[in-house]
Image 1 (cartoon, helix red, strand yellow):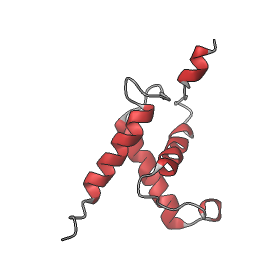
Image 2 (cartoon, rainbow, N blue to C red):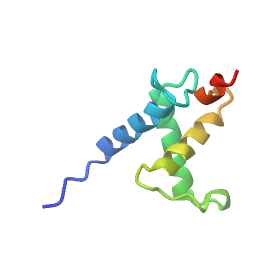
Image 3 (cartoon, rainbow, N blue to C red):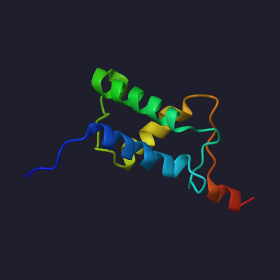
Length: 94
């Protein structure tokens, strides 16, 4: 028997995955001021870009929540000037 397809759970799992890298208290690459709502919004922009297939985004495809999807959602988040990314490894070199 195949497992039940649960897109809402998969979306929530993906948002939690992105959050763990950029929004959690112990995030490896924290984005100051990031909320889970911002990740959801960025996901839907990413989804629209995949579906529209504009020439700028023709290489976009859904990788079922892999690291490339996470990084593309991060890049969409960082398109908003209110967000800045901090690399914890850069902080060690200061």
